[in-house]
Amino acid sequence: MSEPRITINGLSPRQVKMLDVMWNLQTPEDYFEWYESLTEPMQRQADILQRMLILAMSDEMVTEDRRDYQEAREVLGKFTLRGHI
View 1: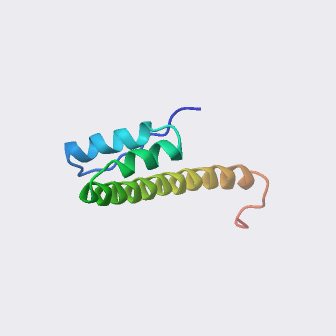
View 2: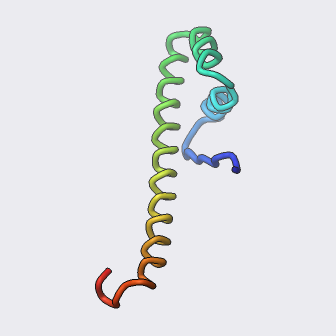
């Protein structure tokens, strides 16, 4: 399975770097250790970026689900009477 590709537009270079760090942490414990090492303003930035990442991932999942749903409708359409689906 390929690694998910997430795009968030409008980020500063610093925000991109912070997201790269967040993405590459291996465990929740690693994340919390890193998070606790940040200053309070940087923790707020990490919170915002985390929420943006969650929203971007959710959006990607919904898009994939729509694609799957369309494919299912096309397949099911072959087995129904015209005009009934």
